Length: 382
Image 1 (tube, rainbow, N blue to C red):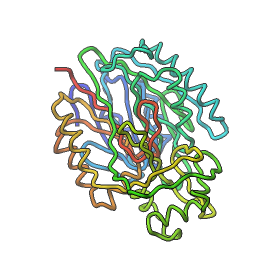
Image 2: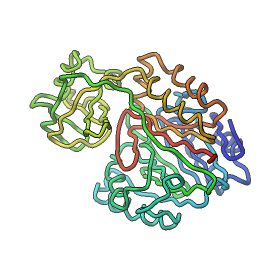
Image 3: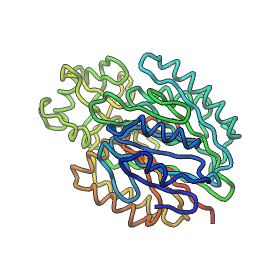
Image 4: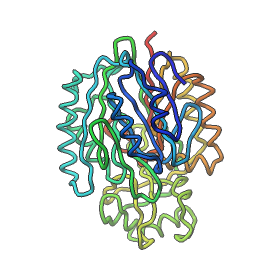
């Protein structure tokens, strides 16, 4: 799909995909690709365009009105230079050997520099025109990356996610014109005067009353060893009325951990898998000892999405970008709603270019969250 400012394309040949969406007016390319794509060809193709770009490996991607769950294709969206009055990019090393403090510090400095370069005030950004997109290396926590941005300024609206890939959790690289690999990329944009954006989030869960689990032992910020003094997998399995040996990715997708801060928001912490012993649980984002988690169950994902998409349909929408948790995909599958959710995009936003990717964690306005879709919608002011 395309309009005068935005184009999308998808396919197995990176050069063909990029050639379909790139022209003399192109100022930025956002792309997502499966774990078995020829990454060398993709990166070299993008570098030859001399266009700013950012993208990452994923576990599935949104392409217009469908979900692509293969590992061998790439989906890309191009943006015309006319859409932005300014932009700036930054790269942060997120290699496992880099400490959280180093990531946090580098992220703060990079965010401040990029905001200055894009003429964006971090203390008083334009809430209709100024935003940032974050793409983080998925096998390292995005929390210090986002904490650094929050230290720099909490007012600028940000969306994004952590790179996915195969669920073997071996590689989840990120790419941009600045470099590629185990990195985090931030892209700051100021829209031209006649355009604006909306950012938001949607989660589809009901709380299971009376089901609480307290973290009593950790072996790292994303490795829960015990709940309530018991092996974590055992306590969790009992809470969802299963045996520990019966826990599967579908279980983790449908029964997740979360807290309710009291402001109407839910902060979800999803379980990735059991640890090597089978007794502990690995999570997709950081956990603090003594946190009291509620247990939440996935519900019909169409309900909340329909109200959001209906609201967006009243705007002169140009593009919709989704950062959607891999576990939302899995829950959608077990609820037999994959085609139904994809069809909603066509029903409410017909003809609008759309892209997105299945993430290992999502972020919005400085928060690292799970099992949520965060989205960015760009539209023309009336």
